[in-house]
Length: 462
Image (cartoon, rainbow, N blue to C red):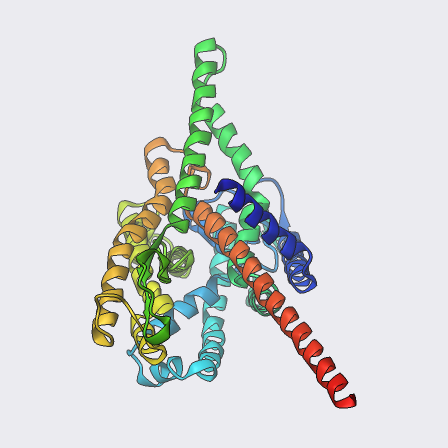
């Protein structure tokens, strides 16, 4: 059985590398990602960075959503964060809260395009607010290592200089979204997710090295006992990291199969031969984690507009920062809530039930119509109560470790980065295989069509 699977995998890889359409899509995706990475390492004109910049959980999360661009103050410093925030708002409002938006969401491809245009307009104020917040935050945490137009304090900048930077960062955000759209349409995988993934991959080795150095720094290596303890700590760190990595892969690949039967000639008597509807344990993918991360940046952004030592600033620092107990609980709640919300958008039990009725399909032992919808909803609820808490737990682990050990959360085990890394990589591979199958089918179809046309021509000539 294993040899058969190995042959199947080999054939799949061979089909991919011999398919010109798929190779073009993969190559196109790589070119866009390389261009994005080049843009994210070039500092914005007028900004000088000397030495290192101290970071906190808020800036680390912003940097994650920016694909690593914020740490270098590039034109992609705010990345896709404002777009994700506006997308959350539009999706929430279009779920029967605002009837016109709800009608657009249900009116097919044309309605989705209109909602996308609304999302692009809505992201503009978020771009402006987040751009200002990043300028203020990095000057505040720069320790004199960042100078903007020769100034190291926000009060030294004129409104023209601040406006110039806001325009540059906003343009960079829209360029990022354009690049993501290009990948989604002409490349492989989800463009927005891949832009975030590229930043994680680019900084993966350096972050890992810094984490190990941080562990070494906690021990006095003058004694053999401390050296052995340090080595064991590093081994434990790597082991737990790999364990979480494999756990994320296992959960992402876990599927609940709902058997499906076909009426009439398609009726199958053997249970083992029945086709099935696969519902993933992590049905909503990486989207809930990205959405929750984007929402958690809003209080920090608002904080940058408040005067120093104000009551509002203290409330945000005490209750809405992710490194606090309340903020971390909110982060976990948002991940679980968005997992439920987005899984229903992805699966949509009502649409599935209607499609089953139209195509003459049914779930054995379940009546068509409302009963089928209720059954799928029930299965989806049970799956979400397993998958959603797991996502929240893995995403919260670094912050819990940081609170206990004092190690910066960006260097701790697990977290949003590992979830995005695993889910986006698996989705990318699935997308490549799907494109290979679809393009292979079209090629065979064209071959059959051309051969049939040639035979008809020969027949008429005869």
